[in-house]
Image (cartoon, rainbow, N blue to C red; front, side, top):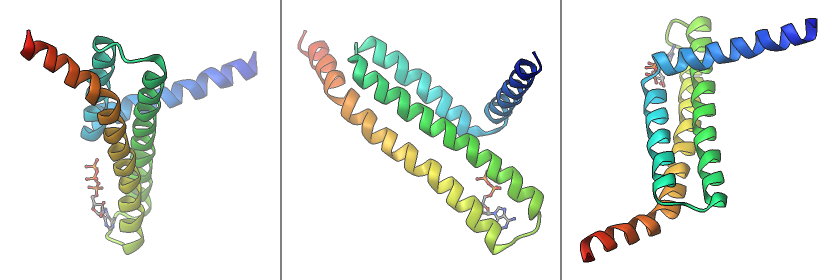
Amino acid sequence: MKEWDRFVRSLSYAIQGIVYTVKTQRNMQIHVAAALIVLAAAWWLQIPRSDVLLVFFSIALVIALELVNTAVEAAVDLASPDWHSKAKIAKDASAGAVLIAALVSVVIGVMIFGPPLYQKMSEWFLS
Ligand SMILES: Nc1ncnc2c1ncn2[C@@H]1O[C@H](COP(=O)(O)OP(=O)(O)OP(=O)(O)O)[C@@H](O)[C@H]1O
């Protein structure tokens, strides 16, 4: 039972971290909004299951890295409230990780959604 309590407690801490990040980080709010729009589009365009998996993975990667970025920012602010070149490297590299994941997700999104979206648009304009 103790093990179970410990598991539930750590799950609750993890959820607190996610809730904090969604509430306070504008970029996270943008990622979550984009993820909801993309998932709705996947349903609307009837994207194949294997492609939806790739979309899920991209969303998870960006959101997970945004959480890590928030953790790095908080830890750096705690350790180095004053300007320091190492603090800058830590924050910039962490933000860079999110940027790379977001850019790759956009490329994946264009490759997956581009053709069916183009087809839908063509149907609309030709009908
Ligand atoms: N203590 C510091 N020492 C050196 N450079 C810093 C420090 N704090 C912030 N910076 C620089 O300022 C940039 C922005 O930092 P900031 O903490 O405002 O992050 P942010 O990306 O604006 O996130 P948020 O607005 O969510 O806090 C960092 O990427 C870094 O280049």
